[in-house]
Image 1: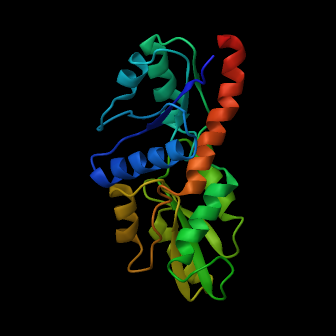
Image 2: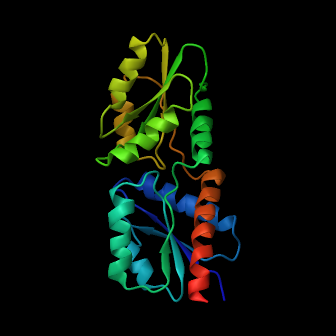
Length: 231
């Protein structure tokens, strides 16, 4: 039996930089798994739509959410589209975060600014989107806690990135840098730039080989559970 297809589903964005980055990430994953059927899909705004991709499947598939947290899109939207599609033999893998490899990439992006966790006098805001689902935000707080002098801040939840940066300054940090807990650039990361008053902001995690490897690891874990049922 052939391997299940890998459907890498992202939220989608009105900002073309986001979909370009997602497609680049899918291309990297495809290059690291020769022969595997790897397809991008989007919940909104971009094409191909997730339901359309599921409808076009000719066999089993593993859906890998290109999401950093298990919030509404992961817990509700993606399972709902899978159920509505009626596609047989589809398994949804875990989201990408909070795999330690992603935090390593965030540190690498930060290092490109000449900053690193533990630098004397440096306070770091690990900036994420934010969610109404508190558990998803707690993950970012825990990740920030792995770095000396780092706290979490959010574009759309509390504490805002600006408030997190102000709190670090009150604690005596002379320099502030912002690490990105965003998979792709877009309007929300632009909002972070606007909030931090000129402090340097690292690039999104992007189409990094280590991110692609996490996508493939999520796929393999879910495929191992799918194959016995599909055999």
